[in-house]
Length: 303
Image 1 (cartoon, rainbow, N blue to C red):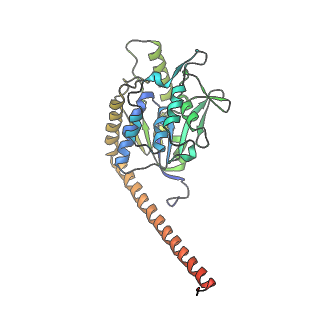
Image 2 (cartoon, rainbow, N blue to C red; image 1 turned 30 degrees about the vertical axis):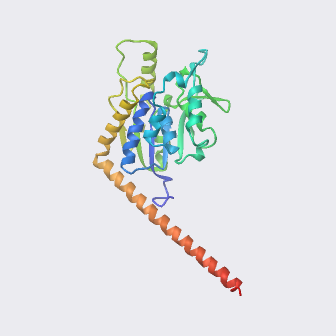
Image 3 (cartoon, rainbow, N blue to C red; image 1 turned 45 degrees about the vertical axis):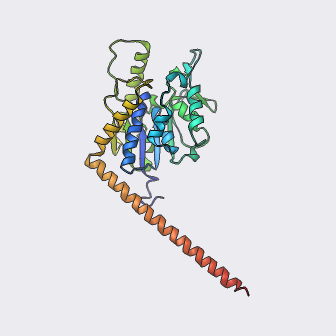
């Protein structure tokens, strides 16, 4: 309902970055935004952001989402594979999403949702936002190269969207009046002791961070979660601590005067939208009454 401006499809959008297990910080930030009475008209997510975003777009509360992952271990989401295209298959994650998501397609989600992936062959960003490939698209967005096999969608291999677009603000920027971005993937410090996992994680982190700088400038409100760099990309043991960090930094950011002003504008928009909808509803009811009276007059009273 574009009563606010013909140039925008949506009033408020959320952009959620990649970051592996650090994505639990998204849930803390989303919880704060809910406490401010905000609801997005569209969500874009990359990798971990797509995982948090798809459940939120499906109507789950942040606390319900973290509960789904409670006591889960990394091995439950993967299947060891011959290391031809990756060490693991994302079979468990695929099954987890199919089991827990209520929506079976993008159109069934409560909030429009954009999943950012990377076309492995063409080396280009591909955004999925409609059709029945919802689960496959989210799995693809989370498929870190070398660690996971690419996700095949319509005979095309897709991998983690963070390779080229880790912070998907630009994906929805032109269609939204305001965008709140949550970036949970800050640059990791070099590990004290190197091993293959830590080297791979830092390499991917540096690569994905290099493509976030411009997108950060596109945010009307930018929430960045500091202090969680110490947690591994695959750390499912510290979900509550990571979520608490996301909550804490979102609270800090939303106290800014600029953030408050956007919150006030959002609530004015909600009030205006409700007023217009109520007026439309009253007009419809009046038209129905008039239509009924016309039918009564044309048919005449029964005796």
